[in-house]
Every structure is written in C-alpha cells, then in structure tokens.
Image (cartoon, rainbow, N blue to C red; front, side):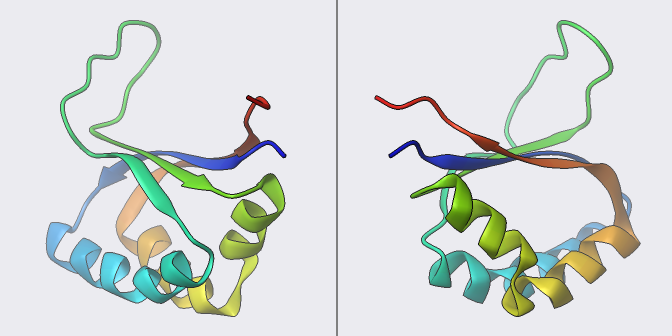
Length: 97
C-alpha cells in the first residue's frame, strides 16, 4: 500500500502562536501515526515562489493522511494555523515501493 503525505508550505506571521498550533496538533499526529520527514529547515526556492517554512509529513496511507486532516483532533489546530499563517497544504499519495 502506498503511503500518504502532507506537503505544507507556510509563511508564519505569529511565531509564538505557531507554537500553540504545533501543541494543539500533536494529539492528531500521534493518533494517525504522523512521521515528520521535513519540518522547517534550510530551503532554496530554485523555481517559483517559495515560502520560509516547508513541511512533509508521512502517514501509513493516503486515507490516514486525509483522515488526520479532517479529524476533530486536528480541527482546532487547523483553525489556529489559518489565523496566524498563510500557505498551502496538500495531501498526496506516494508511489508504492
């Protein structure tokens, strides 16, 4: 079964409240088995417009990745993030190994 991934590109406007987002999202991440492959770090937008913060989160499947995003456990965290940051988040299915 192919894994699922969140790919997020974010510009955070309130770093202190972003910490609240991360803490609020943690129960959902644990419940759905999220594994962070990229979380911030150095980046270089070699094509197109970049954002300062990039995140890649791995899940056991596309279905689990989507379920985490749509879960009640993540809803409060999503609300915080949308209030204090601009960005894009997509859920994608990986290739089968």
